[in-house]
Amino acid sequence: MSDSPDSAKKKILLIDDEPFITSLMAMNLEDTGRYEVREQNDSLKALDSIMDFVPDLVVLDVMMPDLDGADIIYRLKNDSRLKHIAVVFHTATVREAELHAHGGIISGFPFLAKPATTDQMIEFIEKHLPK
Amino acid sequence: MNSAAPTDPPPSHSPLQKLEEGGALSHFASSIAHEVCNPLSQIVLATDLLAGPRPMTDDLRKKIVAYLRQGSERIDKAMKSMLQTCAPIETSMTTEDANHLVEAALSSLLLDGKVKIEKHLTPGLPTVLVDKAHMTDAIAGLCTNALDAMRPNGGTLTITSSAKVFTSSEREGWQRQSWFRAGDHAVVIEIADTGHGIHESQIPLIFEPFYTTKTAGKGAGLGLTVAKKIVDLHHGRLEVGNRPEGGVLAVLTLKSAIQSSLPTDS
Image (tube, rainbow over all chains, first blue to last red; front, side, top):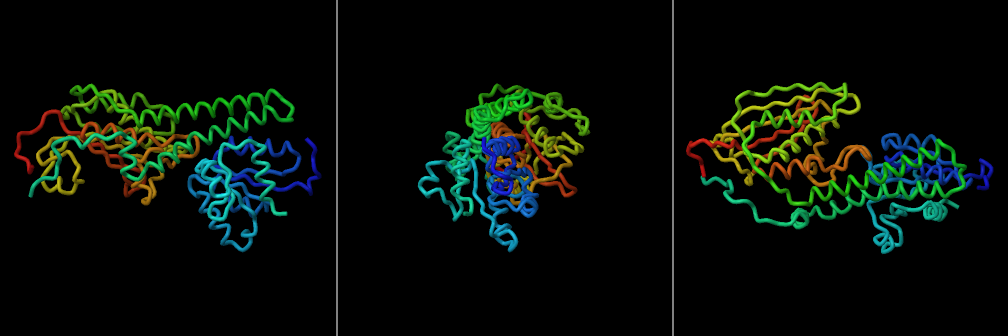
């Protein structure tokens, strides 16, 4: 693990109602030394977390109680303070074959199917991080 | 007017055919994927952590074991629930006192101190012809749903039993596929909670397999599906809706084993 200086680290916010998944993803991503990661498991607090942390990229689940991924993206894209933030979806609701047929993009957003390995997640994040 | 009450069971279809007819197969498949792929994701990521550069401590080892164990248990539970939902149910019917079924269901619940149980069971109810184990499971499933809806703050679960005789006008208000006819004697079991209720738009979905409002890992969303399947098998009726005062009311109506000789509208 080769740590980048904190200022060079990309900020990733994981929004998923599965705390075990976000906790594991956060540890695996942080172990690369390239990312500063925060987790949010309560969809109702998702927008506050985005506002607070101002991430370079949000990794968003789709099926969550209260607010689902579509609700959150709708609110985010309609908020002038947040709409520039890059968002990718990480979900169990799509299959790899289905994604492949759509070039990994559904409704204009990049999707990664669960389960994905940490290497696949890193490749996905790097591809969609704003340059 | 002729009654629309059927006299024969509906044509038999496989569970998958029934889902396809209702347009619910894709929802079912996507729900299975959700229930399996999330814990699978957990297992994959825990394995990556194990193989990664992070120094292994006792605390980390315990965490990884918990992640792996919880993930595999969730997959196991999801698969068993799915098989239970799709498998045909074999029944062995006996004449039972509905209050005994309620008591058996209540005794099987895992209760914490935050929930108060209120029972209003009418003595001397007419007996019902049921598969005792399955119907007890159905009642327990409805009670478990009610308990889950009241977590974590707790509340009151009220279970009531009563007898009723269907009148002609009452019958007309029911769905066409109802098995009840005017003059039928029935037993009604009501299960009420003081939880958060169900969003009105979600009520049509509650009997669909894997539909759930519970947070991740707290239930696969099959309790009501299985309860409905059992009740349908007994030609009973299960209705679930919001109470005006808050919380959910589930009403289970079972035909009495001994029917009246009153003339019916069929």
